[in-house]
Length: 319
Image (cartoon, rainbow, N blue to C red; front, side, top):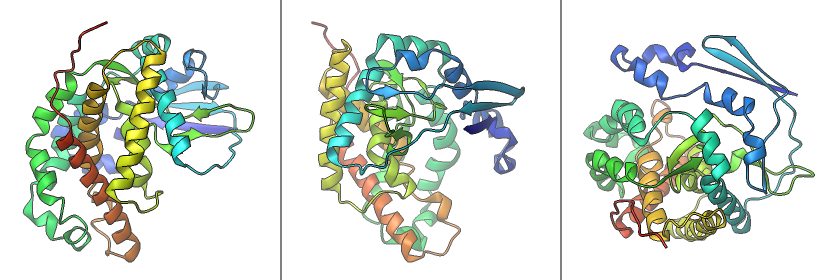
């Protein structure tokens, strides 16, 4: 058995460092109530075949700002993440996004955040000011690995509001919200994946889960070192599989619209924040320099994909 306690971010010691004028917005940006609501709902019965959700034994409100979720242990079966596995996951995430039942659940229990919430929250409060500060790029952890993407990231930072406006106009579907490989478990006796961690489940622009599937392990340092070409090859395969998942649920959003939405989300949610801010107070050890190179590759690919896709208003002609 596993007991997960979730609480409002305002109770975390680090919240004391949030500027007072940003605290209400910052607390709202981490929707802690979403996961208890998801486990109290029938979301598990609505997931497409190939995705499973642990069935909560108990969801208990501890007080107004925290809850505990009692979950059975998931007996995991370790498997390497090769291209075939990424493709299967992308297809299932496309089905999740377009599933009428999952979309209905997202409307009832999902978070109320939008892409504007992220722009006015984390990006405006931390990421964008840092990227536009010349002093940031003198840090020894960034001076080498991020030299080639510095100008591109700063350019995207200046365009963040326009990019967010374009993303906000894209078709709105359902999203797990954090579909990194670490949250897609392989379990004995379960076909497909056991999907965990529903803190950011809700409505989101089409293609939202592709970004975390592609680069979630890069962000956390679990990935192997790759070049832009390797990321691009995996991304194209995943995008095609995601679109087939959409089609299986009756969604006809054109592939070029999905690709553009994915490009926007990748740069806004992963590329701009690829700088390892959490390690800038540490000595640049060899391991941290490896992490910085991997993050810089992520940033480079996100900028490249953005440049290779055309702006789109999100609309398309029906059949």
